[in-house]
Image (tube, rainbow, N blue to C red; front, side, top):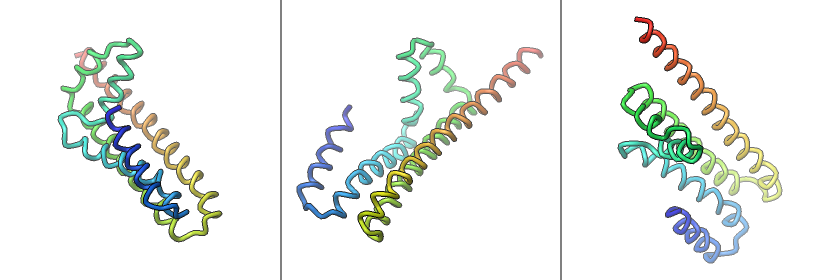
Amino acid sequence: MFLLKPIAGLSLIATLLGGSPRLLLIRESFITGIFGLIFLGSLLFPRPLLFQLVKTTVAKQGTGAEAFASKWSIPGFRFTFYLMTTVWGIGLVVEATLKIILAFTLPVSEFLLISPVLGYSIYFGLMGWSFWYGNQCRKAGERLAALAANR
């Protein structure tokens, strides 16, 4: 919630600075880029943003947030969240950058056709990769746990 007020303020300032069609086209890209930078900046903290988001989701579902958080001591678990946060941060920054470049190089009508396709492609690609990679890591962890239990 604390992020929404500054972002709304930046959006309002961008709108007030001019009614340029190009500026209006890239307004959402600035927000996307800011979120990407927040993801990347969270890598400097003890636990990255994606871990915090998943932990909150697990807590809301009532499926053992403490058990989930206790896995942080496992190096592979930590690596997974650092990597996923990095990929999401880079993906969001790349999307914002591409849209800004396209907004200033394409006619407005073409940008309006291409921009949603580009955005959805990147988001679905990031989500698909996240689910696939998360499942691969979970399966690998289960295999290691089973091996350790059989010893």
